Length: 367
Ligand code: ATP
Image 1: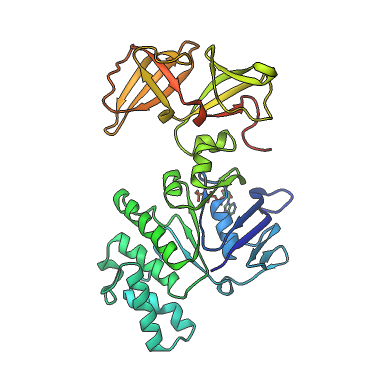
Image 2 (image 1 turned 90 degrees about the horizontal axis):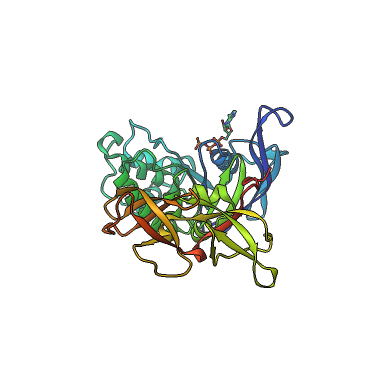
């Protein structure tokens, strides 16, 4: 087991002066025995970060420590095979002409582990990834999910303190991907290995992680638990990336004692307003569709009025597109059997306690 401490890490492709920053000034403290996910859109720097941790790439600034030992800095990089890390890639990277046993035993042979002990370790590891009994098969006699488990077993058999995983489930079909999610999570818990996992799929990150590092444009935007990044996003970029969100224009007016009060569509809403906001500020209220409720009759003083402009039946829920009196558009997700139709006038309750307020003009991403 091992923790990773990343400080001031930067990588410029094409040289520090004129090159493009793939990663800027990353600070990240990955604790021992955690499942940590690097999450963000294509090109945000996730794979670069993983390759820096793995030792395949030298940083242009900053350090990476594993258990307080510097393994990477501008001065040099400890060789990948001395880092006690395993790596699993998107394309399973198993040898097609070797059996499952031969694929998995490879790392132990390199380390000159005696044959009987190596056999025992391979069998234990194959049992751990639910491949017991398939030792003699060739990869083309296995399903995609089983091949990915062989790749996992090959990394796990040498007992790494850290396992780096780069989109390992993206070549699997949707059903298998969901099952493998559960297996990976259980595997991390059972082994106590620190997992660093790269994905651009926010639902995968939410389902798997103890902590999520949300990245954008080569910069870390937020590092927090799944609940924190989903319900309390640090900025609009994170709010937008973590799932469907409405940004509803509002303003802050002076309330009792001068404290700012949120007003949306002429209606006061009891949202949490941070100390960085002042009366007069133009803001956007970030509202998830599941925090919008609709009713045919007025049920409370702080409801807004809206017209239904579109309705989509999604099986387990219904999605409504609404136009508020101000013309702002709002998406709501409700029980699938709610009886609203296009052109209906409805009353809208926003669960303001679950929403987040951001400055409208402020750059979402730090410059
Ligand atoms: P994806 O999900 O598409 O793999 P990513 O978030 O993993 O994206 P990176 O692969 O880390 O992103 O790339 C970050 C930026 O660095 C991108 O703009 C990419 O084009 C660039 N980049 C990555 N590798 C190299 C390289 N070897 N040479 C030049 N530029 C590179």
